[in-house]
Image: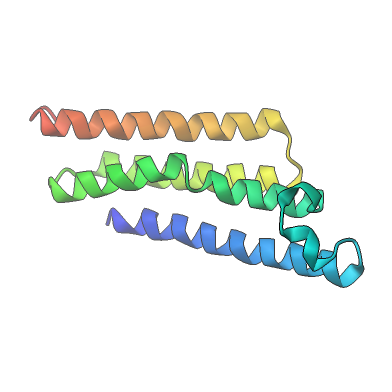
Length: 135
């Protein structure tokens, strides 16, 4: 069951790639940008930069999430608590992505990131307790 939240997060990444492609295609089609502007991100339109930045975010904190999920799996440490934490993390990443791409309000983006950060810490503590035989 611990692989379902991983797959859900991967789906988010795939959706973000599609949104990024769509934003870039629309910018070129509308004349807002040329394909040459995408060689370096310094000339890319702001809308696609936001999506691109969010996509890069999916390869930072979520890497720890993947490691923790795999660690819990290989040590038989998956529990209902671990599953709840994993699904909440994915929900926090979806919210973070939505805020970042839709209107980029740093207050809400920061809160959703912070929640995900705390959830990853909680998963790490859960794994550590399991490895110590206390969980």
